Length: 174
Image (cartoon, rainbow, N blue to C red; front, side, top):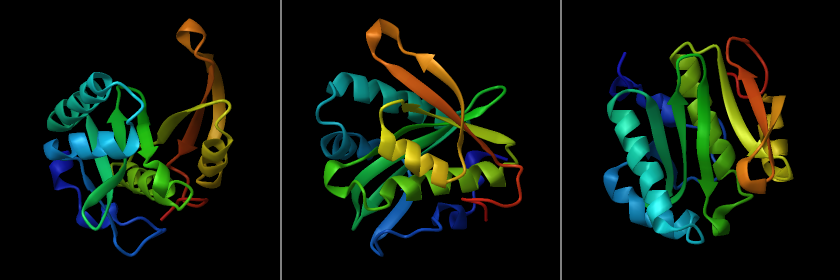
């Protein structure tokens, strides 16, 4: 199955933080609005490289990058990347004005639903060890810590968490 054939119902999260919110695939013209909303403190060139890679992976059916938008304006993004032995939810970000309102949860729910639809066995997500709100959210969605990694150049520690998608029940299950 190609990723372009994903059913539209997969893009409807179980939680709907705002009735005007829609989750859809990343489009090329989302780059600047997403950067301005979610990553203005990051160098634009770095953000651009990340999303050009995401678009290229999507074209090769190696990723599903998604955007959360409210009344058409992007307010968050994330992607599900497929590697040979694991899938990873990466680049989860929500605009500061929209944080704490369920948009990150909705993005992750959609990516988990896509993973289930594709019969993936498990999905990983990485989070900075000191990002307690994200750790709490991912635990609520059924992720469990699997290992800790030290990041290069003293950038801190990250926790890699796993979600067993083969389990028929639990948080985030259909």
